[in-house]
Image (cartoon, rainbow, N blue to C red):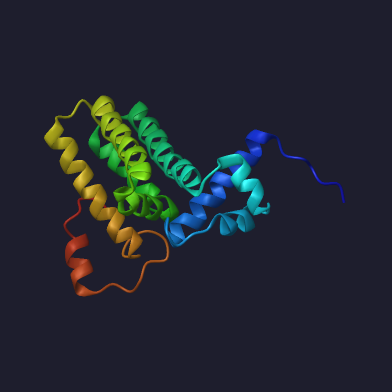
Length: 182
């Protein structure tokens, strides 16, 4: 069987994809570069050769998640530049639980200055994109993100998104406050 050699860019993408998965499950503190390497099918020294540190790898994974969300927002806004359109796009992204749990891990790891600045920059890019794409006020953007953070928490707890848990009355009550079906 002939193995196809990946380009450096393809290998980089493979490592970041594996990092998104690994860090979304174990968080920054609970994930090793060896776990990422095993998921990517490479050696741990190779991961370090490409990213130098676990911090750099984690930041690359967080930036991937943020870029995926921004890209989806931009596609939605190209069709209809409203918060409702972006909200529907985000609702679709809830099916990609790894993205939202990775971002939550990024927020919690932000006490570390080396991680906090890039995570805040990632969040800031999303905030600015929402304002730019929709023309909403700061208050409207704040409310949009507040609902998004609630959805992140509900998604991480498997209340919404793929493979949800059995609903409790409080879940039905809270989810009933949303205009669209989750």
